[in-house]
Amino acid sequence: MNDQFILRRADISDNNALLQLRQKTFQETYVEDFSIPFSKNDIDYYFRSSASSENFAKKIVDAKRAIWVIENKTNGELVGYASVGPCDDIPHPDVRPNEDALLNAIYIQRDQRNHGFGQQLMNVVLCWSEEHYSEGSLWLGVWFRNFKAQKFYAHYGFRKVGEFDYPVGEGKLHTFIMKRQTHIS
Image 1 (spheres, rainbow, N blue to C red):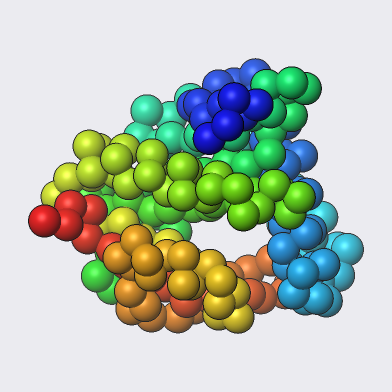
Image 2 (cartoon, rainbow, N blue to C red):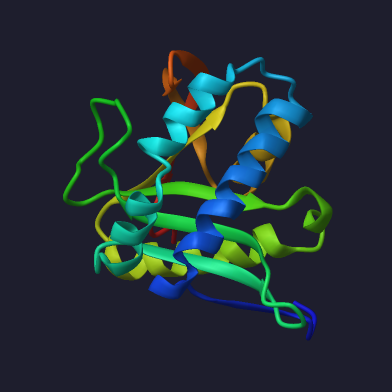
């Protein structure tokens, strides 16, 4: 990572910036890059519920979860983040909620992609998961047509083990479930 950017744990003061970054990267990724026709109502509902400011605040202070951010030191702008915690949101029969972790998100602003930030975030997620969920697996969901993300996750040992429809308001994102053993020898 170059000297302009820093990778660090998020703190409660990052809450509003994280919410703005989440909204921006969701819009860039799904609506603009992949042209998914979510209605404004679906997106608004999604951000009022599962992707709300309150949701980020709870995750930031929860000792069973961790959020890291990539911050531009010159202007304080957050350009990427990763979130990990207990696996409580993947509908798969092999999930062990008290032993497995869930990579909730890795998102990078479009204009900051391809600078190695995703790799940096994934590396801290893997280290943290091995420390906090050493007996379990690390799970994630990825949109079924996001081939670049699927390839990225496969590089880190994730394998597709299922599918489900992730709700975004009344809309749905068909999602592949991917799993990685937390500790690979």
